[in-house]
Image 1 (cartoon, one colour):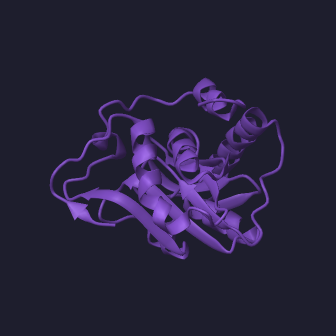
Image 2 (cartoon, rainbow, N blue to C red):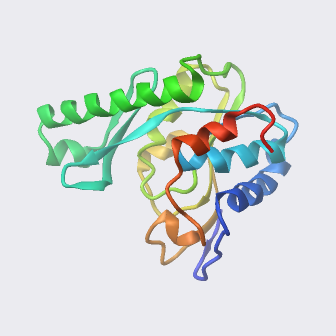
Length: 216
């Protein structure tokens, strides 16, 4: 993990995943890691990381808790298996009733995505395995915090976060992972999309195409 004041742009999420996978090979290839993509955009990055490592690939659904009036600002996240993380900022700024309503709304979307992406099937076996959580970048990282706990609860021996780009700081609770692997940390980081030439919204259909057997 290192910082650079110059912009190193990725062409798209596939390019980022291929580069990140090459970077991770020396540490994790041959150790039977489980690569977990975080929908939506992290699924494409994770798919190509898994291909580079010749590793099993799946996904865990995690949803940001959006701050009322500012959908881009997350004050926490929920994930499948009933995981919840609410930041101190969220508890300071919002009352419990508002927080609970937002959590309930996001759990509805989590269930929809689990049913759609995995047909309601359970997660792959994590017990005793290195689990590498892949997203297309870290802004604050709140969506990853409850996923770390989920992996621990499912017996992962190590939980690694791996992303192509992040800022120089993010949610302190990401330190609960055993390691954080970041290719680039621009000093003038303003958002994940800043590091990509092509960074559109990743759709449900695009996620499903990556999960289809035989996709290359």
